[in-house]
Length: 350
Image (cartoon, rainbow, N blue to C red):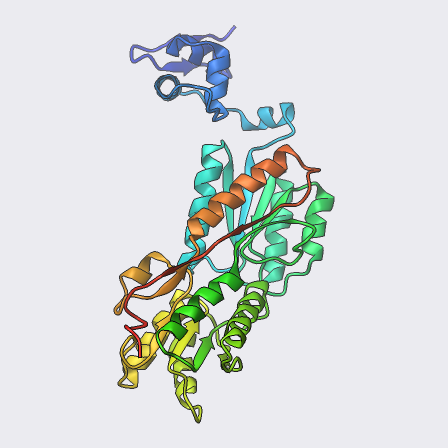
């Protein structure tokens, strides 16, 4: 019979097909086999010092967790898919980081996919993930996604949480900020500064977040008795903001302020203003949206609506874990209250 010998360094060497086992780890760490199992599964029931001791033993003896065998014993794989439409957008980087941190703390591993706003690419990734028996999906649906995608995931028995965007709001779990309240905060601030012609820049594509921001923008302006038609759709990126500010000034009676679809658009607007010999915060008020890390470092620093993308990712992960534990529970809607962050780009008032 092949045997396992302990080397002088304490590492277990194998001959033939023998491998280090949970019992070997338990003996080396001087703990029970069940404690080793809890550590491997990421349980929070183990003290930090004991966890560190077990992990050190795993490294020293070269124990390798047999994921395939564990999957055969359990209906779960502890693998989750994170699906975002624009991985190069810092906002979605923050959402992803928040979700991944929360999943990691709960013992899940995440697979990340960038759909590049392409439903076909999104479908291919989800089909592949289904082959890996994922436990669930957190998705910000790509532009043009059909509600049937969420129903298809449900038919597969794969729990799904929609984050930021939704294509099936009432029948599925959803996490997002309150976009209409966000627009009210933005408009109220600009009106308080004396602005009466306020534009909206960005949001060229008819996804749920665009529709909800447009609706909130119009309602807030209507409440103040102001013109609600000053909407300038454009790609929600730096170039879109830079180009669109010229369109704003081409109007017979140009706006004096703008709420932008996101901070990246707002940054583009400030550069477009500079190219026209104008300055954000002095000649024109620029309001961002999201409060990404770069917003505070920009010049001028962006006044913006903070919606805490990392927190959105974390809560989407927590909701998905709850749904994995209770697949038949009623759908949940988790809506966060945004907040106004006042910096330099809107100036001190007219």
